[in-house]
Image 1 (cartoon, helix red, strand yellow):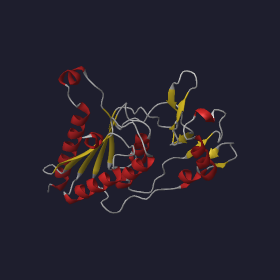
Image 2 (cartoon, rainbow, N blue to C red):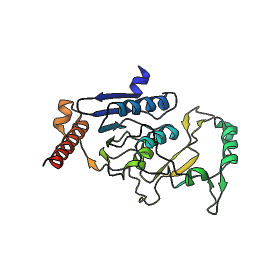
Image 3 (cartoon, rainbow, N blue to C red):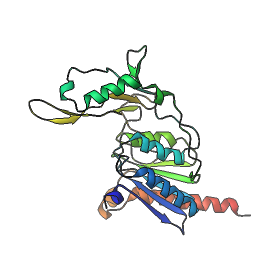
Length: 257
């Protein structure tokens, strides 16, 4: 039940539409296997429309979000323009969980550049290739909202410019310019025992985005209405169904003699 709550696939074979719900990119949800099985099933059912719902996805592993991007991306893509840490060391290491391992990681994989920061160069340079096997080439609709954070914005950003992808919903909670991420150890304060998570890297997803502190805006904005709330309606999903219906009608007109 826990896995089903985190990720699920529903296929409407009659309407050639698939609904992929991904509520976390976290580890432990067998997402690699799930994505593989899902996109194989989507291909076998000859699906034309795919709805990816990440409205409640707070993020997680970049490996998992990148894997989902590979099934939809139509060309090579980068995860970020820059990924760096301000420092490799901390005066407060005794309060930081797994400090030694994180410090070793930084020594092994980061290099100091002219800006004085320690860059994780692999992700700044590397372009990921789209999947060839079971790749989805139909029309995709990505549902986003205020609870879409972190790795979810990386996924959305990687495909939003594609002609066959339409992003629907509301502005993401995660920033469009970048975020703090990657290594995020727990910290426990010595006196109060208060615990919090401390991101060690700064990730700039898109350096060409203005530094406004805003999230990713949908291409089709769908805001709540008093009527939809009163009826407990899924108004964003209703909008996607409407868009799919319109696309089908346009295709029929094109085929008509």
